[in-house]
Image (cartoon, rainbow, N blue to C red; front, side, top):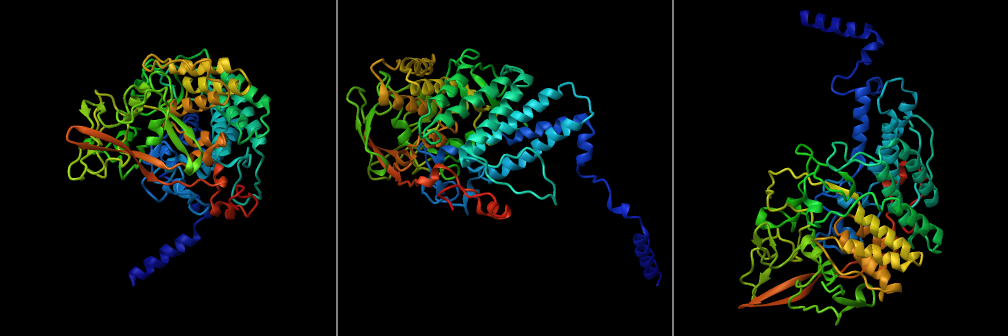
Length: 566
């Protein structure tokens, strides 16, 4: 009876309490009101906005959605190479997928952070808090918003331009803006940000990785190059190419090429490197494990079945010979393309890695490569009963292509282990890209001499030291050399997927089969034989990505599906 009276008393007490009992301040999280009433919390909120920048050191790197690598899986990112992507499964290649999705789909993350950025900008307009660097914080937020919108337009074309926040219960209807309207919006955000940002930070500065005026200029360079390219400039409006050239020109003298192509990519965040313009920095508490996702069984890594990112023979074939000649001449297109040995190159198909552009060995581990003190063995006996330690037959942790990634991988003084925290940065913008952006724009404007000069500058890096592009290379041949220079210089850096699309050559390149290399050892004689690994499919609608079907349903049909994916 006493228990019953106590229960009734408690219930009555609860019902007689003020409604304020429901207005408790949460103790497990910081309220929004607290954030905007505390300068330190506001600054912390702003710093978190940088998480919208997606680095490429995911389990599934974007290279496996291109001809840079053999993608052995037929699910998630494997759907792209096989032509099976659609509005219902596009989420499987999202940056927030557990594999990283190759950072292909960015809609949800992009719009989520867009709201956070717009909220920050709104609050800064009305805030009475004192900030020593308020203008810089606002400028950084505008750079991040511009970065998001560029990531949108290269995937989807025009998207809704949203400059304010909306709350639950608000009435709103979003529709796509045009591609050109988005370009203007991005340009305006960047132009507004530049005056309130430092020109640059040294790569050794603790602020390196924050937005700078030069990062804004680098984004403009890339954006205007894309906007001038055939996908978005079918009439070849030369004023667009001029804007691309002008944007790149602003950055030509502020940086210098890092002398060593290998250490350019594998030194810890904070290392001296005057080629870097803007990067995602890492630390021992905020690190990545790219080596363990991409190397092979020799190091206990999972570069075969797990990351499925073994470099392709297609990419290996496109590194020039040291005499400056391409090893192959291509004809035809798509699945029916053919290649023949360039007689001027000196290429030997039974000694395929000899006398090649040094960037090949700096980017890709192949049979007989020496890396980390180990000599790699990718051979198999003719009867298949014996094989080298690094071949796919030895372990499914070794890529079937019989190549492993070398770019970004640790130097000889750095451990290769799941217990090691890797901090080499992910590079968003660097000088070599700006040189190549400038070369491409100048070529399309008819200035072939300048185009050759800037391609040759990239090739002249001290550790590369490849011959200049000769004056006899002109017209379409020069255009293809420019395209190929981007392919090898920027390999695995999340350029190839977008380059072949903006150039409108994906229906050729992305329909070409993927090859690896089989090496047969008979006694002391090796035979190198390219092996077909994957027939790929690229459809015209794949130049742009579909929007996830559920997203369109949530918006009540006001946002239209990407053309071709309806």
